[in-house]
Image (cartoon, rainbow, N blue to C red; front, side, top):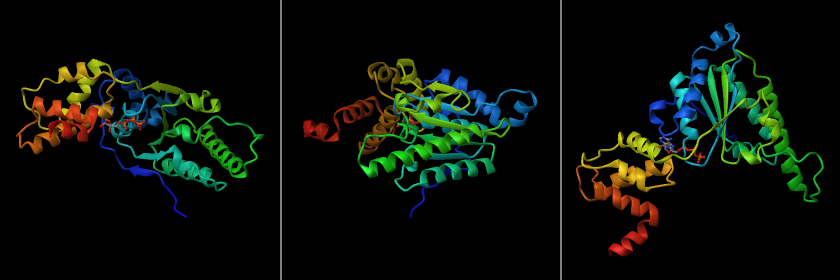
Amino acid sequence: QSKPQARVDGSTGVTFSDVAGIEEAVEELQELVRYLKNPELFDKLGIKAPHGVLLEGPPGCGKTLVAKAIAGEAGVPFYQMAGSEFVEVLVGVGSARIRDLFKRAKVNRPSVIFIDEIDALATRRQGAFTDSKDQLYNAATQERETTLNQLLIELDGFDTGKGVIFLGATNRKDLLDPALLRPGRFDRKIKISAPNAKGRLEILKVHARKVKLSKSVDLSTYAQNLPGWTGARLAQLLQEAALVAVRKAHKAILQSDLDEAVDRLTVGPRRVAMELG
Ligand code: ATP
């Protein structure tokens, strides 16, 4: 039976300079970096160590990115798994994976554990009595609850000065079991929101560093005119524009390449080709 294990990055190489448009969240997360760089100091000064942080917000706005940046800034290992990787019908598998994950992270502390889509494993428990007659459903529910209980045990077992930060990400906070949100577990909840026009411009600038942009391009027009676009989509825009530029043998990305990329990402390449053809 295949055993998903946390993907480990010795160091993610991501820093806060790769993140834009969510300054307030970054400001708050700086404290975790300070802690990871010197957990003993927090202990010595009697400062309560931060340990569980819930990153909440819509998809593609930088939850994974910011989690990697915390580990990258502190230069510590990053253990990443998705909530769905703990969901198994077989009894005890999910909780064994939780134990294993925390054990590995503790051995290499200071370190960061990151569970994306934590709602998949930490949905509100329904209690022992479900009225479903479906045995498979009941077994799956029970297994998920055992896994969540194990996660709660691990979080409660965190001691000050141990140097492991646990980060969870979700875009469905409403589904989470209230026990997880109690103080001492996720003691902080940080909102990672979709960017406004200023944020979109900053995100475009961050990603523009990775491509060759003509000096004549005015990125602020795109930031103004693309409301609702997330960081993930804006990153994709510059990648797509670079592809258009290559196809047209331009030496750098021109405004017209970006316009075409916007069309492609908005209506899809096939429609654009049909209209052009
Ligand atoms: P999901 O909930 O889908 O996992 P997420 O919030 O974790 O989404 P990320 O995976 O962090 O989103 O974002 C995907 C990519 O989009 C990032 O690797 C980065 O290239 C870009 N991106 C997203 N948000 C930002 C941001 N605030 N600043 C810079 N780049 C961003």
